[in-house]
Length: 424
Length: 138
Image (cartoon, rainbow over all chains, first blue to last red; front, top):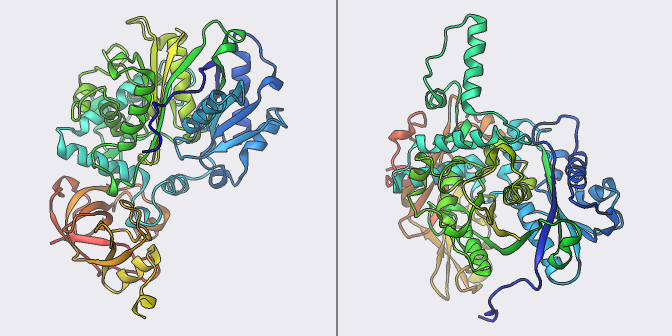
């Protein structure tokens, strides 16, 4: 091995401000409009103002404005719409880990000494296409020569991962549903979430509608009954159902990254990046094992080593729950639970807001929404707010929060980015 | 002279062989590593000394899913909510795993499909333009 030095950043980097668009479905908005909304939100919520001209570079995660809306070369268009030309802005594409990767580019650009002030963002406008079209675009993040020709869709690959997990451990369909219920509970407390409602309230609304129409009332006693009703929760890719899948979402997220030595010019409460890791993995059929994403383990090992921390020292966690099984597997791969313990932890409520290991306080991709290129940065924004005590009704209160972690996956583990943050 | 007749190590050749009834992957001449995917370079020792390797077509089911929300190409073949299809990962007897369609299983009762089931290459449903690698229970 040539590179044997312990990996560390050339200088410390911190986040000093964040902004997010509303997540949802916006028929007449384009990629650039949605990004402007996130950027404007950030500018309005900076603790001390910033002149746009002081931003020296931008890195924007975007999976496929090309396929979703027929617009390539998105970064300079965004720069124009932000009034940021001629500042260099680069688009980063790593499927659903695009903005997690963009954040790493921003971190490295500052740590290298090249820049002091960098904007990092992510955006996806997905809802112009019908569902089949979105399915095809997302499937193009899988292997087009050997996975897609075997009929695999994106949910299909995660369905196969779920089945392997069920076979090896005692994971069952109810465990998966519990993850979705929990994330909707959290999302109901997040005003920016696409699904700002609990499964219980969705169920109650259906009962109320049936009552209004004088229809026979459904016999559901609780959310599990509702989710086990095939009419309400149809199969997508067995063993995954509709409520196991993150939705199709339009949205953008952005943040301001600066050299820590000047962070005090922008805020008295910066959030420092103390660990970062990124790794790649192979298609599931060629993966190290069928029940985990090895790239998560490698990326996490890098981030833990750089920060000098271990999983039990993390207070706030956002993981990539593009499917309910993905959250369970991530909770194991990141070292929070041992292999096979993830489903039981979800079942016992340990990952809920009031559990001993809360996961996805934002509602996760499941309830907050999953505009794929924006999700990596949106996760960081939740950690930023939680660590600063600004997460409103979903604020974790159990202890003095200091350390946060984000986990962003591209494809089915082809890319994984893990970052660790500290309240200064 | 024989080398001039060797098909290039790529997916076009893989699917051409499939049309001829053969599941052909590659083997590294240097380290012996097998791959069910046709690659021009060994991903283990990085040697480009590669040869074709014919798999027996015998395997076992590693995992699977039954897909109800289908891509446009499968919708055209009549698959969908009421008629899901099964895709899976098979573990070839020689070692490597590969993604494949799983035929002759009841996709409306996936709980009756079992990991570990012995599978065999199924070449009955090969379409000429876009052949799909398929297996079925023995």
